[in-house]
Image (cartoon, rainbow over all chains, first blue to last red; front, side):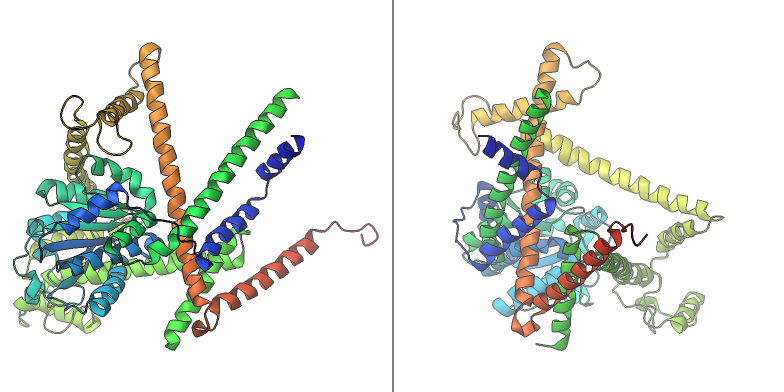
Length: 281
Length: 282
């Protein structure tokens, strides 16, 4: 028993750099040797999928990119899966960005999905309206008059000359909003200034850290489902039927979580043993 | 594969490993990556703001191509600016699909006032711009929060407790039991933030219950935060593995080896410096 206690105390006193090495290993190994742990869509992912799947063929969907390279591993796989789903169902996709680097993420996603995979036409099937600074004021601008805010698209073409912009003047002209968000401005601003005042249904994909902040809107029905971080992306990929980066990262994610939980348990046990010993002496 | 792509991969690998090297200890690689990041971010944001907002939406409305008249005083100013920089002010006015709106001179002036904050004598001008921004943001946010966070959330927490077709108990989803938990949690959580009454007796017990609900929420937040960080780590590792392939000239392996050698050499030098000086030598 004493041996076990000493071992736990030793772990509790471990140099933090050993923990970094162990975490690096448990993340790396499953990437080299995948186990293929099962992925089961949660209710919130299923709700988001159903909301987009139920849209009538040829609906106008506004997809907003509010993330950058720093959160790309979490959000990018879900935007790929969502765009794939929307294009597969023949919807028109209008892309806006509240973050400047969101425009690069959008360009990368449409190049790969819209152009290479679906061979769609720019301006007819999808349009990249691009970034506009102003945070929630941009959402308000889209609500009242999108033409005034976006007189040109991201490629410098006048929006009046883009065929799919015909009949699109304000947010109510869209049938659905999907926001891929990593913080402020993002999902919360779209709920407050976009979806709630106009009644246009919306769904979202967010970073894991944002889930708790956005979940109340999902619970109350203000947001139709949520894709929560990389697991959300993996679940959506499963529903769409095309596995991607989200799916391949899930083994590493699950094992890393298990190891972190073990560290937390050992750390706590070591803390209580140490406290007990201090009380004794 | 183009030279630019390969070079980009090498830069990405170097910056990623340089940031990771901080986990060992603070070192020059980390400092380089940190400074490069701050500099590039500032430059990128400034450029993006200028070319997506100020040039098309401000200058484009003050001197639009649609109203161009070379003889007018207003466009003579424009031609002067065109002489200074034809990239920002192209010949014949800015064609971004706008008509002329001189009202935009007001935000233009407020913007310039904000920039005056760098001068100690004229910095008071910046208050006008800040006052406008604060006032506008406060008005805009008050409505958003009231509508979505107050009214929307009150509506959302108005739930069914008796009758209907929902089950009494379900682990996930809508059930009478879950609705009761949400109601109790909401009331207890709100009670904790009520400070006009001392947290004692029955009210104290309710606020204590509120603390437990809040702690569960913080626990969930922590779990999600861990999940997010691991996802980002996976993303970087996926890229590093990709860049270690022959088509990128094994960028990850080379940079990792060189970095470890240099950090090891540096650590040895530091250790030699910190060795106690022998008495004989002294």
